[in-house]
Length: 251
Image 1 (tube, rainbow, N blue to C red):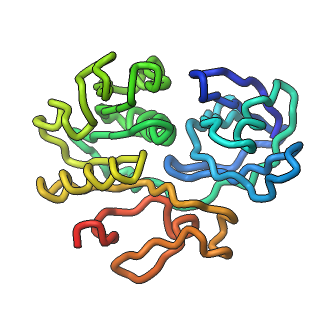
Image 2 (image 1 turned 90 degrees about the horizontal axis):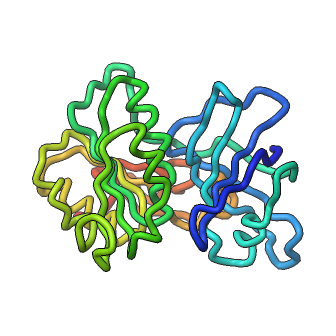
């Protein structure tokens, strides 16, 4: 993949826009990419990164990267024209059907977990639905791509310090008092478990995108195993998106 552009979203987040000389394969919201990190001697494993957006018309793939370690900081230093080795698309995405006509889809994200929800929201919008996004962060500086989310639906915000939107966690936001017919969520595990409890208590269908450590992306290394109602499953191969009914979070 060729880096078309790198945009700094915050002090610790960048958006990498990638393209290729050949037509990119179809990709689904919720799928991910395994990226090889070159130029760092002690980074041997690829980094799994959610698909932030896939623009089929411009043959462009967007990856949002949180620069939290040496490998991801190296990715943040990429420049236009650099080459990035990627394995894609991997995993199973969110459940979307041409027959779906959701009245009130609610997409809940926290931190860098908002990344796959942009593409999901774009697809829901393309299918004629009007998603509501509920996005949370510690402060207003942690809220990413709000202007892009606003293109596809209504955006609600929470911050822990009250610097933007309603103060508190996403599970405290007043939008949860409104009806929803399906919830999609991605973010820190405690946040997703809290959203799953809310969905379970209110009998709302809910899918979560797990962020277990995924080294190979192919189900070979078994480091991303999650206990489910069907036994131990590899998040990279059998997920990363799971309906909460398949997880043991409520037991």
